[in-house]
Each structure stands twice: as structure tokens, then as C-alpha cells.
Length: 396
Image (cartoon, rainbow, N blue to C red; front, side):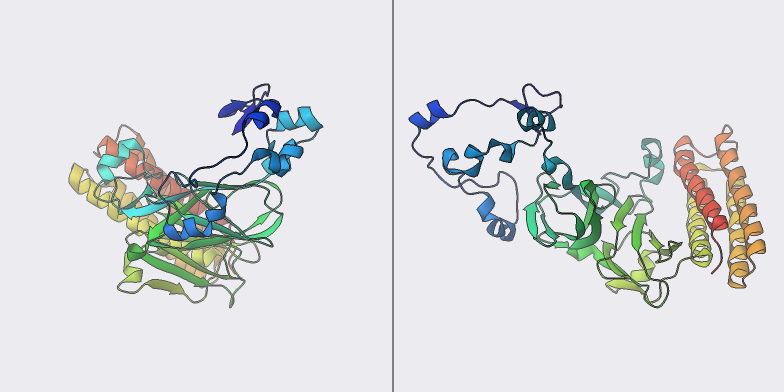
């Protein structure tokens, strides 16, 4: 951000306003070759946005020459000149585009540095920067488009209201989301992160909530890469989200009544197809407890693989198996409408999970290596949190 040299606001570069008269007397025109992007950008995007990269023209023939406030967005500087704060800094949409690729060499937010060595062979996908800049289009009453720079984009003076944001680039499956802009700063996607996937690796998670209570929001969490999508569906109550087909995901939804639901998607769900479709997306206790059971199966299998590598004694595996059995009982009870029995079995699962966590944390009496403990402990903690949320969620 550019800030005045007299400003109290931190900025990247300081500037000062000086009289133009001496420059105007010495310079008649600005000539030379057309400016271009100094970073990799798709040809179609450069053609579309060419008007943004032509010569600036002669400064004193532009509106900013007679109205300098046009470009003064630093709040302290604008306040000192006109006693007002620029709306341009209070109506922004920003984000960073990243790529989900196969392999564990990229960023893995769900895995600590201590756990990476234990999980190196288990991590199917991780996050990388985009090698080519992407085009970003904001479809609103007055559509605007820009391109990323180093994967980052920003849009100023965005009108309040409902917007559709689409990110696209050569060789990538486009990703889109809707959001409401009420003013201020909006970080698009999952906390400002939007994830794209190469077209050759992409598969699509589709869901339809129209036959149930609708879908207001969708969040897709890869087991190791973390949240790769978080937003409102593009179409009312239906979603279509590109993901990497090698990943394993939890799809968390919020329905039209504000209730949460979830289900798991694995590479096997795609098979040789390009998508996996959930014809009727439902929220409530049933979907949460089934998702928890699927997560615990994967967690128990991971604990077994690590125990075999480490020569661990297996107490944690036994406790995870007990927790899984209790959750499977809770699934059956939920399907029968027996809320009290379901919650009793979920509490038994929480107890087994807490004992498994204590076993890992108490001088690792089960024999796992430190890196394996670092890999298992947060996942057990996540299972405990999910079970507690499921207990609090009513049937129906």
C-alpha cells in the first residue's frame, strides 16, 4: 500500500504530493512502447484486460489532476486533505489462489513439522503456489475482472450486495463461490484462500439439497491439506466443487434451517468417473455420526500402519476400535430415532478417544515414535470435537 510520508499508517512505499507546474513545463507527452505484465499471465487474460496495461497518458489531462482525491486511498492522508476517509479501503475483496497437487512436498496445514516424517507416505495431496497467474472475475451489477500477481488479487470499491466470484486459469478447473458483501473487507474463499486443481487431476463433488432443507453453505476439508473450499453454493441449494481426485475429504454443509451435516468423500467414490454425486444432501445428527464413523475408520487404519512401522504395542488401536464400535452403535440408534441411546454411545466413544489421547501423551507408553504421536494426536482431538458436536445435534 502507498502511504503519505506524513501518515501514521504503515505502508509499503511512502510518497509525497508535489506541485506539477515544473514537470508540466518540461514534458509535452509520454511516449514509448505499451506496458505489459511483468509476470506470467495467460494470453486470453492479457487480451481481456489489455485496457488496464496501456500507457497512462498525460497526467494533467486525467481526472486525478483536477481532483487529486481520486487516487488518495490512505485514510490518514485523505483525512488530512478533505476530512474524510476513502471508501476504497473499506469495500475490498481480496484473496490468494493456490493449487492442490499430488505429493507431500507442498504446504500441509493440517500436519505439524514433527509429524511430516511419519506421514510422508500417507499424504496424498498438498498445497502449492500457482505457476501461472489466474483470471479473477467478480460478477455483480457492474462485472469487473483482474488477474492475480504472485497468486494474490484484490478488488477495490466493490458494491455491497450479492456477488459471484469465479477463478479460472489455463489448465485448471474453474472454481466459483457466492458471497454477500456488506462493506468493509471480504476475504474470499476459506479465510482468503481459493484452491484450484489442474484439469487432468480434477474430479467434482456435487450435491443437491433441494429435496431436503436446502444448502446454505459448503465447506470441503481435505484430511491433510485442510480447507480447500468454503462458501455459498453458486446455484441455490446445489453445489459443484472441483477437488483433486487423490484426496480424502469431509464435506460439511449448513442447511436452510442452520443445521450442520457432513459426509466423507474418498478416491474410491470417484473411481474412473469425473464426479461423485450426493443426490439428496441432508443435515442433522444422522449425517454427522456417519461421517464421524468413516473418519474413525481411517484414523484407526492410520494408527495401525504407524504402529507396524514403530513396533507399537497396540493399546491406542484398541481404544480407537472401541470408539469406532461405539460410534457405529450410535449410527444404528440414530437411524432408529433413539436420541438418548445414540448420545450415550457417543459419550462412550469420547471417553475411549480421550484415553487414547492420554496414552499417547503420557510418555508415549504405547511405543509410538514422537513423529507418529504428532500425527495421531491432533486427529484424535478432531474426532473428540466432532463427537461432541454430534451429541449436541438433534435427530431429524
